[in-house]
Amino acid sequence: MNGTKKPIKIALTVIGVIIAVAIVSTCFTVINAGHTGVVMTFGAVEEKVLNEGLHFKLPLVQTVVQMNNRTQKIETNGTSSSKDLQIITYVVAVNYHVNPTASATLYKTVGIGYGDVIIVPAIQESIKAVTAQYTAEELITKRQTVGEQIKDALSEKIAHYGINVEIFNIVNFDFSEEFNNAVEAKQTAQQNALKAEQDLARIEVEAKQKITQAEAEAQSIKLIQEALAKSPDYINYVKWNKWNGELPSVMGESDILLDYNSVQGN
Image 1 (tube, helix red, strand yellow):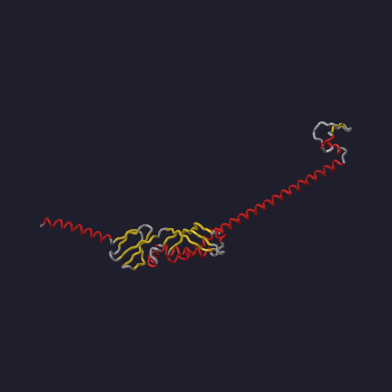
Image 2 (cartoon, one colour; image 1 turned 180 degrees about the vertical axis):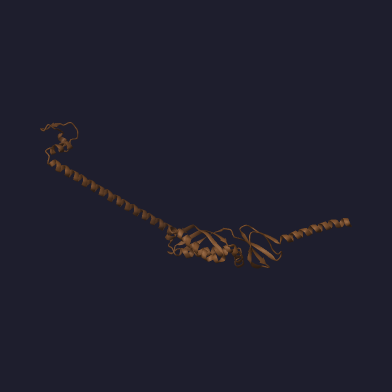
């Protein structure tokens, strides 16, 4: 009989140890890095949260839910309207984190799905409120300012939940095909107008240059004429200027070799 009882006793001991280990293991919880532990006693959320590391809890009485306090990202899309009633299709990304001290309250009031419940609707509302203050063209040219205003509006909406907005990025703003065509046509018209203005300026400059050149030549001729008119060599000067460099076919009386045809201007 003693031989039969010994294996049973050993088995009961092993079972008891396993049960004891299981019970003891439920008395402790480990909070991961970047998280806080929200403690619930019989389902009631306690205000005090557990920081990173190993903690004791009452087995079967208390449960712990871990809340992520690290930087997280939400990317969402939707539509809104501009001040001039253009439809904007947007894609935005938000980096945020939950304050550790607000973890218990956020879990109690919202739960772990606070991203879809709070943040996404707040993003959509903030975008609609800000884009309605700008024309579609301004949303393009003042994109950075628009992004900063949306971030400020979003921060104000979710700050009381203990959620901090770190970075707000406008990934993309898309407009209707009609608006895009109108923008392209406007840019083309501006480029054509600029080219026409530049061409006109160039023509005016060239015209002034020609006038200046003509005036200079006229003045030069006038001075030469005035100087030579007083000199007996004036006629010779005119003849030499008309000579084309070829040997003369006619000998003049003044002992100067001249090409008759050249002198006549032929």
